[in-house]
Each structure stands twice: as C-alpha cells, then as structure tokens.
Image 1 (cartoon, rainbow, N blue to C red):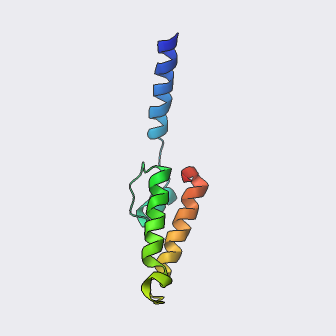
Image 2: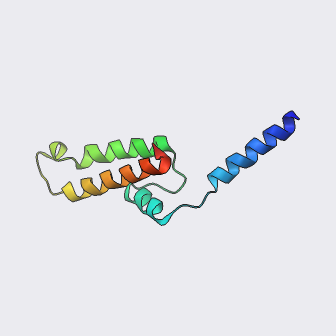
Length: 85
C-alpha cells in the first residue's frame, strides 16, 4: 500500500511539472529572463533584482528605464496571479 501511494505522488508531481505553459505565462517569464519551469522563489528573486536595477531611484532619477520597469511589474503581477507567488 505504501509503495502505491508513493508512486501516485510521484506521478502527480511529474504531471504538475509537465503542465502546459500558457503563451502569456511564457511571455511573462521571458520578460523576466526566466525559463518555463521556474519556481515561485526564482520568479520573486528575479523580480526583486530587476526592480532594483531599473528603478529610477537606482539610476540617479533617470526615468529612461521606466517602461521596462512597468513591463517587469506587469509580468510579475501576472505570474503571481498564475500561481507563482
């Protein structure tokens, strides 16, 4: 009985890892420079890195990367709503 339960759990885990990635999810991950299959922890870490890099306060008030910052925020918010955070 125990072996059967472990086998079912392993199959469930593999199925979850192989679930299809939606195009919007793929685009959001790409925007953050991540591959499909990234963990929620990796998404959050990358988001924080990119915000620090592109925020105007980190660039002496230069707002030239503001559009990129908006894209990063939108991608992260989408991924959070898709279960990545």
